[in-house]
Length: 356
Ligand SMILES: *Cc1c(COP(=O)(O)O)cnc(C)c1O
Image (cartoon, rainbow, N blue to C red):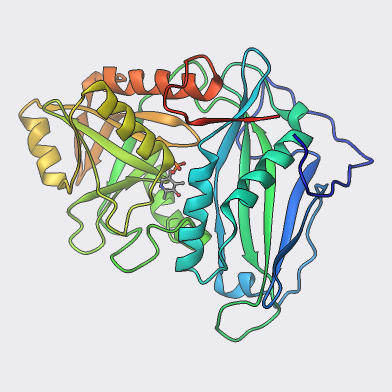
């Protein structure tokens, strides 16, 4: 395939990191994609250039009012050597929904996916091949007009960078310990909870640090109005299995519409497992635990795919889920999803997109 973007190759290729010690988001490839937006002119000059620091005016809107958004997806190399992406059209659609909420101009979704493919194609030899590794793709948009008034920026940059990453879990899926956050909130109705933007993350750091200090890896967010209904786990979507029903919060404005979440729901429906998108109170979860009906809990997201939860702590009460072991539903979902992403399981859903 021939892409339309001009490519300036680096004259100074970097050494590739050791595939055995890859971490998340610390190494970056040799190239990046950049495209500019100017009011009246639209998005223009999409190009692939050597990976390098940006030069921005200190007055750029993004530094002051956080007008920015980001996405995340992965490229895998299959055993046969094919390079494939997982549902990149969904990232393009979600980008435009986030953009709408943050007054960032819309991007042509075909062009968006082509830009990802073109860059992955240029840096394809950076995709690690060891079991569990992948190439993480980070598209993002920043408002870079130098202006201190509060209004939408008239200039933006759309950038894509790539990072070879290691397995999220070393030595198999390990259940995590989760703290139910009842002081801070992530999102509330009418806010930016369903937008993938940096501001949401800046606002979540304090809760995460406090949970870490108590010995928990992540937090379970409750709704912002009553601190009653379960919403998300850190930066991933939350699933509960109670009395053989799989339950996840509905997309009512405060939940990030995860692509992994959507895929999990589709796979469960296909398997004939009962999956319900509904409000679930933390009291209902605690009651189910007392009744011996709280069977499984897991998080879904691009980074870990499926992350089982082994312990949930709410107001000092600890719930040990499935004896702290990964449950059968979480394991099956992980095997299927990860299998489809890496080409080990036949993709009957039409989710994978080849880069060639
Ligand atoms: C990105 C993200 C998710 C997961 O979305 P995926 O598309 O599955 O990676 C969930 N919650 C939040 C807050 C996120 O930012």
